[in-house]
Length: 309
Image (cartoon, rainbow, N blue to C red; front, side, top):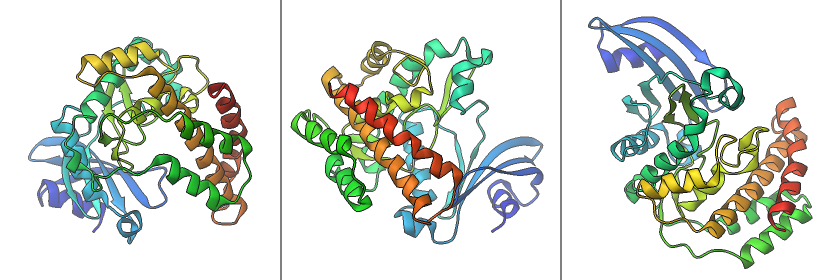
């Protein structure tokens, strides 16, 4: 189906399509900005399309992601409203705002929003973690250390700092007190932010069952501060995040567990940087961007040395 056919199927055959623009990014999925008029009402939309076979490769398609986003909305998570969804696509309302972290962290337009963001993230995460567990396909969580050690072993690249981090994390692993829906990539860059703060949480394809503190730790990974000092996304402090999370109904956060998951997040991102670089070096995808990500590996090794002190 074409973009126009999908929109008319959702809004009615007489719908007038006034604008379609393909947005950059996405090798396996297309993203379109669409403006349409139906029954005199202007609709500003975003359409995400799976390429043929993408759903089979990923294990779940956009229809599953749409079900997850609907469950998130019911739980009180700010997400774009789903207009229509089927296996090859999601059609959703377009939320006005910014997603580029450097603009969020530096532009004057977001000066008043920045002090609010850490607390707003805490409240959004508390809502995510009260979503019904059956919103994700696999309710049994995987062991993250085993999962990512296997990835590093398959890459066949020697990284002594990563090996040391795995040993230290295995020896200091905190007890998991509960299992919830975990967003899996909740960070600066996957949030739509306006002058009033967080307007929507994006990119749900990595959602899974796991320890909820994983999400809080990932948000605090240094890479997502984009050169700024505040530990939470470059815009706030640990106390702001944790206090808002707990007040919004999240369970009490053990600070040692939060540090463990932040450290794990740095290790995970370091391994992902190796993966991306190997795609370029081994000929899977020739890309200056992927090659440049290789420079980030040593940054993560340095950060791990500080966190594991």
